Length: 358
Image (cartoon, rainbow, N blue to C red):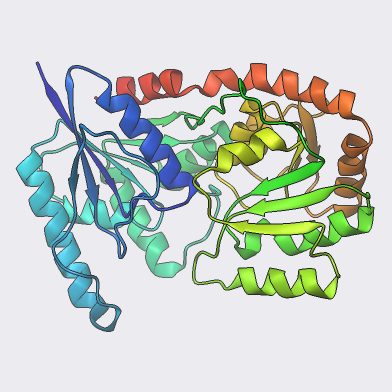
C-alpha cells in the first residue's frame, strides 16, 4: 500500500536545516512504498540543494509581501492547509523552530499527524510571542524529533510531552576517492552570522601566523546580517588577503573539504552542525567550541579532534596550531572521525525517521 508523506519547510535554501531536509527527501523518495511531497511556503521558496526528480514540489502562487505581513501570513496559513488537505498525507514532517507553530496552526483540527523538529540550540529563547506559541501548539504535534539527547531532556521538561525521539542528522558523506590534493588549508563552513564568530576565527588564525597556510571560509550572509562586508574589511585591516579567503555560498563545497587539512568551527550556538559531520566524513580533524549541543555528539576530544570550552580562544589557538604542526596527528584524527561518523549515514538516519513518523 502506497503511503503519502508531506515534507513541510520554508525553503531548501543554503543552511543546515535545509540540507537535512534535502537528504531526507532523497532517502524517502528511494522507498518504493512512499509518495513524497515537498511543501515550500517561506518568503523565497528557494531550492539550493538538489531534490529528487520524483518528488512533487508545492509552492504558493503569491509572493510574501513584507508591507502586508499579516495578510501574507494568513494567505500562507490557508495555502498550507489547502495543499496538505489535497495531498491527504499519512504523515507530515515540519522543520523550523520559527515555523513549526505556524504549520501546527495551519493544520489545527485536521486529522493528519504532524511531526515537528527544531534545528537549533535547544534552550534558545525566541521572544515572548514565539515562546507562547510553542508552548501552546507543540503538545498538539503527533511527535517531536530532537537532534541530541541534551535537547530531548530539555524539551521533555519544557513541553511536558512524552512522544519525543532523538535522531541525529543524516550527514552528506564526502567521496574521498578523488585526485584532489591536500593543501595547507584550515577550512570553516557556515553561514556568516554573528554566532559563528568568524571574525574571531580570522583573528585567531592570523595570530598563529603560520607561513604557507590559508584560512578558507565557505558561506554567505544570512539572517539579514551583513557580515561578508564586515569580514572583508577586517581581512583588509589585518593585511591578510593572501591568507584568509571568503568563498561565499558554493555548491561545490565538497572540493574544499577534500583539499583542506583541518576543519575549524567557532560557533557558539548549534543544534547539530552538519558541517562538522561532513568534515569528518572527508577525513578532517576538527577543532570546535564545545557549545551546548551538537559538536560533542560527533567529535571525541583527543581522538577525532578537539573540543574547546566556549570562547576560550587561547586554547582554541593552541589546539589549532598543534594540528597545523603535526600532519600525522591530523591524519590519525581524520581516520578516527571518518569511522565514527558512519553512524550518521543517510540510510541509517533516514530509516530512523521513517520508523518514527510513518
